[in-house]
Length: 344
Ligand code: SAM
Ligand code: SF4
Image (cartoon, rainbow, N blue to C red; front, side, top):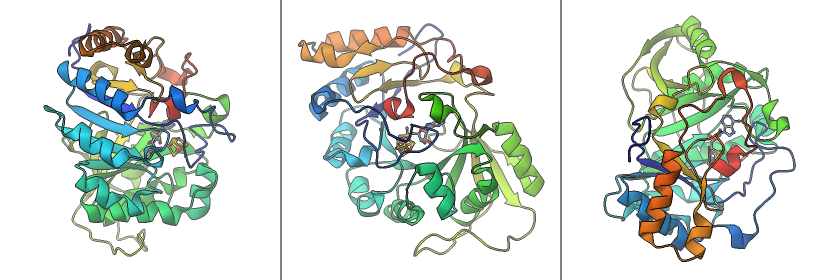
Protein backbone atom coordinates (compact mmCIF):
# COMPACT_ATOMS: atom_id res chain seq x y z
CA UNK A 1 0.00 0.00 0.00
CA UNK A 2 1.72 3.20 -1.10
CA UNK A 3 0.62 6.60 0.25
CA UNK A 4 1.38 10.14 -0.66
CA UNK A 5 5.08 10.07 0.18
CA UNK A 6 5.46 6.65 -1.45
CA UNK A 7 6.22 4.86 1.81
CA UNK A 8 5.04 1.28 1.61
CA UNK A 9 2.67 0.52 4.46
CA UNK A 10 2.82 -3.21 5.14
CA UNK A 11 2.81 -3.46 8.93
CA UNK A 12 -0.15 -3.25 11.30
CA UNK A 13 0.23 -3.00 15.05
CA UNK A 14 -2.88 -4.31 16.75
CA UNK A 15 -3.61 -3.27 20.32
CA UNK A 16 -5.97 -5.82 21.80
CA UNK A 17 -6.49 -4.29 25.23
CA UNK A 18 -6.03 -1.01 27.07
CA UNK A 19 -5.57 -2.87 30.39
CA UNK A 20 -2.15 -3.34 31.92
CA UNK A 21 -0.67 -5.07 34.97
CA UNK A 22 2.01 -2.35 35.27
CA UNK A 23 1.92 1.46 35.43
CA UNK A 24 5.22 2.46 33.82
CA UNK A 25 6.02 6.06 34.71
CA UNK A 26 6.73 7.07 31.09
CA UNK A 27 3.55 5.47 29.76
CA UNK A 28 0.74 6.41 32.13
CA UNK A 29 -0.10 8.21 35.34
CA UNK A 30 -0.22 6.49 38.72
CA UNK A 31 -3.96 5.85 38.46
CA UNK A 32 -3.63 4.16 35.06
CA UNK A 33 -5.82 5.08 32.12
CA UNK A 34 -9.59 5.33 31.80
CA UNK A 35 -10.54 1.90 30.51
CA UNK A 36 -13.04 1.41 27.71
CA UNK A 37 -16.26 -0.43 28.60
CA UNK A 38 -15.85 -4.05 27.40
CA UNK A 39 -18.40 -3.54 24.61
CA UNK A 40 -16.21 -0.80 23.11
CA UNK A 41 -13.27 -3.15 22.63
CA UNK A 42 -13.05 -4.90 19.26
CA UNK A 43 -13.90 -8.58 19.48
CA UNK A 44 -11.37 -10.98 17.96
CA UNK A 45 -13.78 -11.60 15.07
CA UNK A 46 -13.74 -7.85 14.41
CA UNK A 47 -9.93 -7.71 14.65
CA UNK A 48 -9.74 -10.50 12.08
CA UNK A 49 -12.05 -8.61 9.73
CA UNK A 50 -9.72 -5.60 9.88
CA UNK A 51 -6.69 -7.86 9.44
CA UNK A 52 -8.17 -9.53 6.36
CA UNK A 53 -8.96 -6.18 4.76
CA UNK A 54 -5.45 -4.95 5.58
CA UNK A 55 -3.89 -8.06 4.02
CA UNK A 56 -5.89 -7.42 0.86
CA UNK A 57 -4.15 -4.01 0.70
CA UNK A 58 -0.64 -5.43 1.12
CA UNK A 59 -0.13 -5.65 4.89
CA UNK A 60 1.82 -8.81 5.63
CA UNK A 61 3.09 -8.30 9.19
CA UNK A 62 1.13 -7.94 12.39
CA UNK A 63 2.33 -7.05 15.88
CA UNK A 64 0.06 -7.73 18.85
CA UNK A 65 0.38 -5.13 21.58
CA UNK A 66 -1.61 -3.25 24.22
CA UNK A 67 -1.82 -2.29 27.16
CA UNK A 68 -0.48 -5.67 28.15
CA UNK A 69 -1.68 -8.02 25.39
CA UNK A 70 -1.12 -11.23 27.37
CA UNK A 71 -3.82 -10.15 29.83
CA UNK A 72 -6.55 -10.71 27.25
CA UNK A 73 -8.00 -14.23 27.14
CA UNK A 74 -7.74 -16.00 23.81
CA UNK A 75 -4.63 -14.16 22.59
CA UNK A 76 -2.89 -17.43 21.68
CA UNK A 77 -5.74 -18.41 19.40
CA UNK A 78 -5.90 -14.93 17.85
CA UNK A 79 -2.20 -15.17 16.97
CA UNK A 80 -2.73 -18.57 15.33
CA UNK A 81 -5.65 -17.21 13.30
CA UNK A 82 -3.79 -14.09 12.19
CA UNK A 83 -0.79 -16.18 11.18
CA UNK A 84 -2.92 -18.48 9.07
CA UNK A 85 -4.36 -15.67 6.92
CA UNK A 86 -3.02 -16.19 3.40
CA UNK A 87 -0.18 -13.77 2.64
CA UNK A 88 0.80 -13.08 6.26
CA UNK A 89 4.56 -13.33 6.71
CA UNK A 90 4.78 -12.97 10.47
CA UNK A 91 2.95 -12.24 13.69
CA UNK A 92 4.99 -10.77 16.55
CA UNK A 93 4.26 -9.51 20.06
CA UNK A 94 5.27 -6.65 22.32
CA UNK A 95 4.86 -7.44 26.02
CA UNK A 96 6.15 -6.56 29.45
CA UNK A 97 6.86 -10.28 29.83
CA UNK A 98 5.26 -10.78 33.24
CA UNK A 99 2.92 -13.50 31.93
CA UNK A 100 5.32 -14.99 29.42
CA UNK A 101 6.76 -17.52 31.86
CA UNK A 102 3.82 -19.86 31.36
CA UNK A 103 2.71 -18.64 27.91
CA UNK A 104 5.86 -18.49 25.78
CA UNK A 105 5.72 -22.11 24.60
CA UNK A 106 2.01 -21.96 23.70
CA UNK A 107 2.58 -18.70 21.83
CA UNK A 108 5.43 -20.23 19.87
CA UNK A 109 3.32 -23.27 19.02
CA UNK A 110 0.57 -20.93 17.81
CA UNK A 111 3.04 -19.50 15.29
CA UNK A 112 4.28 -16.37 17.08
CA UNK A 113 7.57 -15.48 15.38
CA UNK A 114 9.29 -13.36 18.02
CA UNK A 115 8.75 -11.06 20.94
CA UNK A 116 9.86 -7.61 22.07
CA UNK A 117 10.04 -7.28 25.86
CA UNK A 118 10.00 -4.08 27.85
CA UNK A 119 12.70 -4.13 30.50
CA UNK A 120 14.02 -0.77 31.63
CA UNK A 121 16.38 -1.80 34.42
CA UNK A 122 18.20 -4.82 35.80
CA UNK A 123 18.05 -3.42 39.33
CA UNK A 124 14.96 -4.76 41.14
CA UNK A 125 14.27 -1.50 42.99
CA UNK A 126 14.63 0.65 39.87
CA UNK A 127 12.48 -1.76 37.84
CA UNK A 128 9.83 -1.62 40.58
CA UNK A 129 9.99 2.18 40.69
CA UNK A 130 9.68 2.61 36.90
CA UNK A 131 6.88 0.07 36.55
CA UNK A 132 5.27 1.19 39.84
CA UNK A 133 5.35 -2.20 41.50
CA UNK A 134 6.60 -4.74 38.94
CA UNK A 135 8.80 -7.65 40.05
CA UNK A 136 12.01 -7.83 38.05
CA UNK A 137 12.44 -11.55 38.61
CA UNK A 138 9.06 -12.32 37.00
CA UNK A 139 9.97 -10.23 33.95
CA UNK A 140 13.33 -12.01 33.68
CA UNK A 141 11.60 -15.41 33.96
CA UNK A 142 9.45 -14.30 31.04
CA UNK A 143 12.57 -13.41 29.08
CA UNK A 144 14.11 -16.82 29.80
CA UNK A 145 10.88 -18.57 28.76
CA UNK A 146 10.89 -16.62 25.48
CA UNK A 147 14.50 -17.66 24.80
CA UNK A 148 13.78 -21.28 25.66
CA UNK A 149 10.70 -21.31 23.43
CA UNK A 150 12.79 -20.07 20.49
CA UNK A 151 10.99 -16.74 20.08
CA UNK A 152 14.08 -15.24 18.56
CA UNK A 153 15.57 -12.80 18.24
CA UNK A 154 14.21 -11.69 21.60
CA UNK A 155 14.48 -7.91 21.66
CA UNK A 156 14.57 -6.06 24.97
CA UNK A 157 13.20 -2.50 24.85
CA UNK A 158 14.40 0.02 27.42
CA UNK A 159 13.07 3.57 27.51
CA UNK A 160 15.94 5.62 28.86
CA UNK A 161 15.14 8.18 31.53
CA UNK A 162 17.95 10.47 32.63
CA UNK A 163 18.45 10.30 36.38
CA UNK A 164 16.27 7.20 36.68
CA UNK A 165 17.66 4.27 34.69
CA UNK A 166 20.44 5.71 32.54
CA UNK A 167 22.89 4.16 35.02
CA UNK A 168 21.61 0.79 33.71
CA UNK A 169 22.94 1.48 30.23
CA UNK A 170 26.07 -0.67 30.47
CA UNK A 171 24.37 -3.49 32.40
CA UNK A 172 21.66 -3.70 29.75
CA UNK A 173 24.33 -3.68 27.04
CA UNK A 174 26.08 -6.50 28.92
CA UNK A 175 22.81 -8.45 28.90
CA UNK A 176 23.05 -8.41 25.10
CA UNK A 177 26.72 -9.39 25.33
CA UNK A 178 26.18 -12.32 27.68
CA UNK A 179 22.90 -13.69 26.28
CA UNK A 180 21.38 -14.08 22.80
CA UNK A 181 19.17 -11.01 23.07
CA UNK A 182 19.17 -7.71 21.23
CA UNK A 183 18.80 -4.68 23.51
CA UNK A 184 17.25 -1.50 22.14
CA UNK A 185 17.37 1.85 23.87
CA UNK A 186 14.40 4.10 23.14
CA UNK A 187 14.16 7.88 23.43
CA UNK A 188 11.36 9.07 25.69
CA UNK A 189 8.43 10.30 23.61
CA UNK A 190 6.25 13.16 24.87
CA UNK A 191 2.91 11.37 24.64
CA UNK A 192 -0.05 11.04 26.96
CA UNK A 193 -0.31 12.34 30.52
CA UNK A 194 1.87 15.32 31.50
CA UNK A 195 2.88 13.17 34.50
CA UNK A 196 4.26 10.51 32.13
CA UNK A 197 6.01 13.12 30.01
CA UNK A 198 8.08 14.25 32.98
CA UNK A 199 9.04 10.70 33.99
CA UNK A 200 12.74 11.48 33.66
CA UNK A 201 15.16 13.67 31.78
CA UNK A 202 15.31 13.17 28.05
CA UNK A 203 18.45 11.31 26.90
CA UNK A 204 19.18 11.21 23.19
CA UNK A 205 20.15 8.06 21.35
CA UNK A 206 23.41 9.74 20.30
CA UNK A 207 24.28 10.52 23.93
CA UNK A 208 23.70 6.86 24.82
CA UNK A 209 25.90 5.67 21.97
CA UNK A 210 28.63 8.10 23.01
CA UNK A 211 28.52 6.68 26.54
CA UNK A 212 28.70 3.11 25.25
CA UNK A 213 31.63 4.05 23.00
CA UNK A 214 33.54 5.26 26.08
CA UNK A 215 32.98 1.85 27.71
CA UNK A 216 33.88 -0.34 24.75
CA UNK A 217 34.19 -0.80 21.01
CA UNK A 218 31.14 0.26 18.99
CA UNK A 219 30.53 -0.20 15.28
CA UNK A 220 27.39 0.10 13.13
CA UNK A 221 25.87 -3.12 11.81
CA UNK A 222 23.52 -3.92 8.98
CA UNK A 223 19.93 -4.83 9.52
CA UNK A 224 18.73 -7.22 12.20
CA UNK A 225 15.59 -9.28 11.27
CA UNK A 226 12.48 -7.13 11.58
CA UNK A 227 14.69 -4.19 12.46
CA UNK A 228 12.12 -1.43 11.88
CA UNK A 229 13.22 1.97 13.11
CA UNK A 230 16.24 0.95 15.21
CA UNK A 231 19.83 1.78 14.21
CA UNK A 232 22.00 -1.17 15.23
CA UNK A 233 25.56 -1.32 16.52
CA UNK A 234 27.85 -4.04 17.75
CA UNK A 235 29.37 -3.37 21.11
CA UNK A 236 32.20 -5.09 23.00
CA UNK A 237 33.12 -4.05 26.55
CA UNK A 238 36.60 -2.52 26.74
CA UNK A 239 37.73 -4.91 29.46
CA UNK A 240 36.19 -8.14 30.81
CA UNK A 241 33.28 -7.12 33.04
CA UNK A 242 33.66 -7.81 36.75
CA UNK A 243 30.15 -9.22 36.88
CA UNK A 244 27.56 -10.18 34.30
CA UNK A 245 23.79 -9.79 34.47
CA UNK A 246 22.14 -13.04 35.64
CA UNK A 247 18.97 -14.53 34.25
CA UNK A 248 17.03 -16.99 36.45
CA UNK A 249 18.02 -20.56 35.64
CA UNK A 250 20.02 -19.63 32.55
CA UNK A 251 23.76 -19.08 32.52
CA UNK A 252 25.46 -16.61 30.16
CA UNK A 253 25.96 -18.07 26.68
CA UNK A 254 28.09 -15.45 25.05
CA UNK A 255 28.65 -15.77 21.34
CA UNK A 256 30.19 -12.49 20.21
CA UNK A 257 29.67 -8.74 20.33
CA UNK A 258 26.42 -7.41 21.80
CA UNK A 259 23.87 -6.18 19.28
CA UNK A 260 22.56 -2.84 20.52
CA UNK A 261 19.77 -0.87 18.87
CA UNK A 262 18.96 2.78 19.35
CA UNK A 263 15.49 4.09 18.52
CA UNK A 264 15.53 7.87 18.24
CA UNK A 265 12.05 9.07 17.29
CA UNK A 266 12.80 12.56 18.63
CA UNK A 267 16.35 13.35 17.54
CA UNK A 268 16.43 11.19 14.39
CA UNK A 269 12.83 10.67 13.30
CA UNK A 270 12.31 7.79 10.91
CA UNK A 271 9.02 9.11 9.51
CA UNK A 272 10.28 8.98 5.91
CA UNK A 273 10.53 5.18 6.12
CA UNK A 274 7.63 4.53 8.51
CA UNK A 275 5.70 1.50 7.24
CA UNK A 276 3.15 1.13 10.03
CA UNK A 277 -0.47 1.54 10.94
CA UNK A 278 -1.91 1.25 14.43
CA UNK A 279 -5.24 -0.25 15.38
CA UNK A 280 -6.37 0.65 18.90
CA UNK A 281 -8.31 -1.78 21.07
CA UNK A 282 -11.39 0.43 20.51
CA UNK A 283 -11.07 0.03 16.76
CA UNK A 284 -9.57 3.38 15.71
CA UNK A 285 -6.99 3.05 12.97
CA UNK A 286 -4.18 5.61 13.12
CA UNK A 287 -1.45 6.12 10.56
CA UNK A 288 0.79 8.08 12.93
CA UNK A 289 1.54 8.01 16.67
CA UNK A 290 1.19 11.71 17.14
CA UNK A 291 -0.97 13.15 14.38
CA UNK A 292 -4.66 13.98 14.41
CA UNK A 293 -7.02 11.90 12.38
CA UNK A 294 -7.72 8.21 12.14
CA UNK A 295 -10.68 6.18 11.01
CA UNK A 296 -13.26 4.50 13.19
CA UNK A 297 -13.29 0.89 12.00
CA UNK A 298 -15.37 -0.37 14.92
CA UNK A 299 -18.23 1.89 13.95
CA UNK A 300 -17.93 0.83 10.32
CA UNK A 301 -17.90 -2.89 11.18
CA UNK A 302 -20.85 -2.55 13.55
CA UNK A 303 -22.77 -0.69 10.85
CA UNK A 304 -22.22 -3.70 8.58
CA UNK A 305 -19.19 -2.68 6.49
CA UNK A 306 -17.87 -5.52 4.36
CA UNK A 307 -14.24 -6.10 3.39
CA UNK A 308 -14.30 -3.74 0.40
CA UNK A 309 -15.58 -0.87 2.54
CA UNK A 310 -13.08 -1.66 5.31
CA UNK A 311 -10.25 -1.74 2.76
CA UNK A 312 -11.32 1.65 1.47
CA UNK A 313 -11.36 3.07 5.03
CA UNK A 314 -7.90 1.64 5.70
CA UNK A 315 -6.65 3.23 2.47
CA UNK A 316 -8.17 6.50 3.71
CA UNK A 317 -6.14 6.23 6.95
CA UNK A 318 -2.99 5.57 4.93
CA UNK A 319 -3.68 8.66 2.84
CA UNK A 320 -3.83 10.68 6.08
CA UNK A 321 -0.33 9.58 7.09
CA UNK A 322 1.53 12.85 7.64
CA UNK A 323 5.10 13.35 6.36
CA UNK A 324 6.33 13.56 9.96
CA UNK A 325 5.06 13.10 13.54
CA UNK A 326 6.06 16.63 14.57
CA UNK A 327 7.52 15.60 17.94
CA UNK A 328 11.02 16.85 17.06
CA UNK A 329 12.65 18.72 19.94
CA UNK A 330 10.36 16.90 22.33
CA UNK A 331 7.22 18.90 21.46
CA UNK A 332 4.28 17.03 23.04
CA UNK A 333 1.82 15.35 20.74
CA UNK A 334 -1.36 17.44 20.47
CA UNK A 335 -3.68 14.47 20.28
CA UNK A 336 -3.53 13.48 23.97
CA UNK A 337 -3.45 9.84 22.88
CA UNK A 338 -1.46 7.58 25.16
CA UNK A 339 1.09 4.87 24.39
CA UNK A 340 -1.00 2.27 26.20
CA UNK A 341 -3.84 3.15 23.80
CA UNK A 342 -1.66 3.23 20.69
CA UNK A 343 0.30 0.10 21.53
CA UNK A 344 3.74 1.74 21.39
N1 SAM B 1 2.75 -3.50 27.61
C1 SAM B 1 3.60 -3.86 26.53
C2 SAM B 1 5.02 -3.44 26.77
O1 SAM B 1 5.25 -2.65 27.68
O2 SAM B 1 5.90 -3.90 26.05
C3 SAM B 1 3.13 -3.36 25.19
C4 SAM B 1 2.58 -1.97 25.11
S1 SAM B 1 3.74 -0.66 25.44
C5 SAM B 1 2.72 0.76 25.24
C6 SAM B 1 4.73 -0.71 23.96
C7 SAM B 1 6.05 0.01 24.02
O3 SAM B 1 5.83 1.39 24.18
C8 SAM B 1 6.95 -0.43 25.14
O4 SAM B 1 8.18 -0.90 24.62
C9 SAM B 1 7.17 0.84 25.94
O5 SAM B 1 8.45 0.89 26.47
C10 SAM B 1 6.92 1.91 24.90
N2 SAM B 1 6.56 3.19 25.46
C11 SAM B 1 5.52 3.49 26.26
N3 SAM B 1 5.50 4.81 26.57
C12 SAM B 1 6.57 5.37 25.94
C13 SAM B 1 7.10 6.70 25.85
N4 SAM B 1 6.53 7.71 26.46
N5 SAM B 1 8.21 6.89 25.11
C14 SAM B 1 8.80 5.87 24.45
N6 SAM B 1 8.34 4.59 24.49
C15 SAM B 1 7.25 4.35 25.22
FE1 SF4 C 1 1.88 -1.27 30.60
FE2 SF4 C 1 3.53 -1.45 28.53
FE3 SF4 C 1 2.60 0.95 29.32
FE4 SF4 C 1 4.34 -0.33 30.87
S1 SF4 C 1 4.73 0.42 28.78
S2 SF4 C 1 2.43 0.66 31.55
S3 SF4 C 1 3.80 -2.42 30.56
S4 SF4 C 1 1.40 -0.69 28.50
